[in-house]
Length: 377
Ligand SMILES: N#Cc1ccc(CCNc2nc3cc4nc(N)[nH]c(=O)c4cc3[nH]2)cc1
View 1 (cartoon, rainbow, N blue to C red):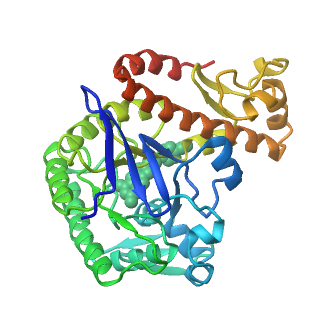
View 2: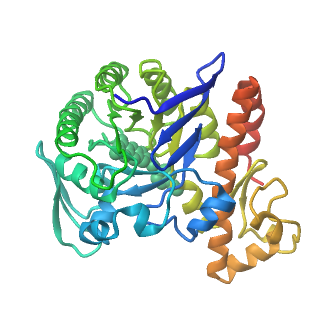
């Protein structure tokens, strides 16, 4: 398997700083990936993603893009990079998680998932092979294997059955990719996904099966699905002990700013979550000094800059009082300002983490910063 990851510096712990190389450019790790589900990171321009947020890679979604605009349009455009004019790396999730959490009704069998579109109620079917075919046409640089995200909580035997099906589906994904090369001329790397719910023995088996698949990178799934934070950390720690050190590790769907730093400390290189953008649209701002609910009355006459420790233009060009007004008045501009702020903060979080890993003081730094991140302002 082609080597796409180079570690610049490992720490005395499990945190490491590295570079992932794709045909659409390099990604400095640890990295946070803004979620652009339906070919847009909600309320944010591609130019703002590049220049203000300094995003290096964004996420797209197989389930959503398959339903709308559909693969006919996607192929005619020459893939998602061309369609949305984003020329840096893209990762697409495989559709399983979205089918299970979004579709109005779905039936899972060994063959795949039958589901009803949440958009117009039409019936569809997705299988490992169909997910790979869709992701080929989307053209993302990193493709996620079609898996079953085991629900939480679940009985041991259910978790075991679900994990074993995910392992059989992985083989079907790999076989299909072997037979059907990329169609746009750039490399596409398949990442398999570790499952096993919160059972250590199942997670060990799954991490070993995933490592054996010898793909370019590896992902940890089935977390950030309602389990206690400490369980998420315990499982992540156990799985990163088994996944190969020389390949990128992607923890799916994580998380809060403090989850991000703790996960980096446990050997994670890549993370994604809708939290910064979804919370932004509700007026929740993440900062180095904690979380601000901008709708709160206390900001009504606070004309200080949005975030004195911020890195984006919105942090200095607008006041807290102005942003609060926009939310109260339901002005679209409010969601745009808050989304740029939160995403720029998440990218600054991982940029600072990388800096401290390279400087050799990541864990001391993390332990001073995490309590501040969690507080309510
Ligand atoms: N605001 C907000 C907010 C909304 C949702 C979430 C949960 C995200 N968690 C999550 N995404 C996932 C995607 C996943 N994709 C796949 N293919 N497999 C997974 O096991 C998987 C697990 C996930 N866990 C977290 C925060």
